[in-house]
Length: 177
Length: 177
Image (tube, rainbow over all chains, first blue to last red; front, side):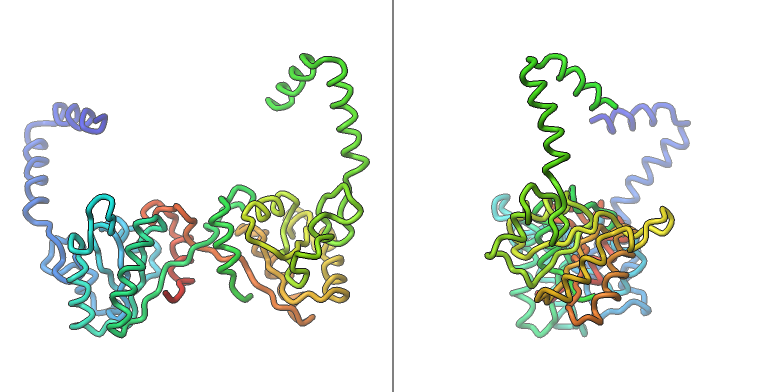
């Protein structure tokens, strides 16, 4: 609401040419940007830049809820695999089942591509965990390795102020030094 | 400063008997509470309640910076081992070396008790990591298993808003589903 107001005032203050350009950009976005036919992420190209990049590891697929998660993981500059964007999470309470998500596309990719590992990178929420579990049970019989993001102390976190569930996960998932 | 002011006003509003009791409690705390001779945590008893509890697993020792970390881990109700409180972290810049911490007591415990595993539960800060590394190198040759808290996404966290370093750790420490 506040953002809409701010936007409206900004448009009123724009020179006419800028406003026209802005309007064209909005229309352009809606007509030019579409889902990548492979990973389902948003793109302007026919196939998105990540799927089209031969230097990425196409055997490792990071499964995420939405395009924003792709952006977040790309910011680490450490992930070299590709993605699969579900465009949502399974949520029976909201009537969202696997049919509403890009699950069929994922199964198709497992059958047609040389995928070795699926990394379930959905949020550690009820829906995120349920979706990861569902996809794991669905995809493991197809012969791919399924892994899950690690849960524990965030870097820079403080034990004293960390919630019990996170601390419990950090203790039970401890690793050898 | 604000807390001190609040405390001062609270004392002024107390009945005389309460103020006397409060003053006695402060003196009492300083005379009665001391470090447990085993784990170095604060206690009123000769040996602290955790060290004295035969139901705890005395072969697993969780190494922490301070008494507040013991309280935080106890709140999970899921840890059944015992503790060792260092009373600080190694910090060369502040002139704090292993000699200032209860490291000698820890080495003594490893020699005299039946300790199988040390869990390094120091904070994921520079000092916390350095202390964990230092103790790991010191204690592993004595024949104990040394483990580290898991780092990754905090439970309830959101991938989109998670910092790059945590996300990188969550990806690289991923586990089989």
